[in-house]
Length: 308
Image (tube, rainbow, N blue to C red; front, top):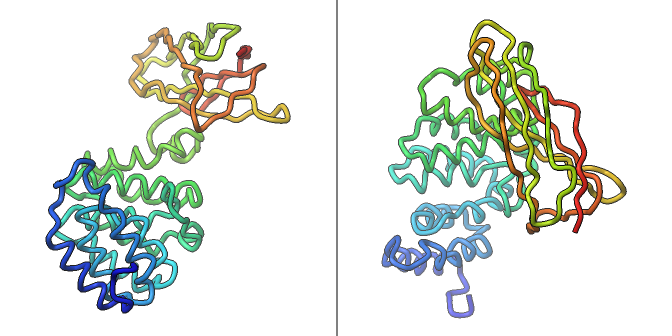
């Protein structure tokens, strides 16, 4: 910034010339070396909407502008949403993805969008335009955006699943990925939409290691039976209740599989859960718990001891 014109419109002209000379994929690490470009526009272009969005459209084809556009959504909400709706029809898939990813209510490592967490509906036309996008890269962004919505407004996600489900296989796959948070929570409405009923399913013979040391694996097994005469779709998960401070437990759900179980069929499932230090979790020695979840119905947790 010390060497750029003090006037942002003048600086924008130089940035435009620079971006025109850079080639996507020319450097190792993809677009990572160009991260200073959207950051510059975010910091110095917030009061110059026209010049900034024109730059975002070009820069995002080198490196994603998903973080940089968010202050613009907060300051220039209506104008930015209209711009993103236009971007959702852009010929370049990076620009189309920016429309979805940049407007996510809870984009990881980015500033949140409180207004969109409260009411995500202004961004729904963007997702509607992109739900059948030819790029899997774009459709994954739509699924993640919808999953963000589910965390604050589950009913909106459920309504979208009802409206879009069955349109085509790719959209169905997008919706299933978008529903992952509600599925893990065992939301009755989303389970019903996917035909995941636990009425005729029985979990038994849960076996597990009673003591585990840090760095080892918790080995466990159980039986799952379909008591119905007809095949049943089963979503099989397990929950780990990790000990936290003040003798509280934090619950984390892990998916095992989703499959069909024939009428009268019984299967035995064996799994290992690695317990090793990771940056996102602090382990406390002592009692931990494990439960099995089938189509949203959870078994009574069993305990094991974690030692260092």
